[in-house]
Length: 114
Image (cartoon, rainbow, N blue to C red; front, side, top):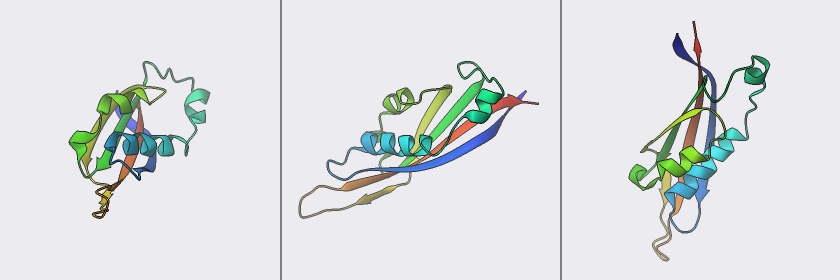
């Protein structure tokens, strides 16, 4: 059976002081998660440990500075994969050398369906 996307949620997060890309990414993922409910999956009695696949894409200006394992650990259900790509936004503060980091997150839930 092929995996088919059944849910797509989007979120944004930031770290206004400190330039922490992981903190911004975690906030973006939590924002996305708080926009959805998995009621359909519960109604279908989907086993989230073995049958639910969660793919997370994080967009930030410096993808290599995101701790992907921390982001992965923040997802409560599913077989999770996380990747970081170029995206998001850094807002410079040259007077204080304190950029604001803005991250975008796309959280996809896939099920194996015929």
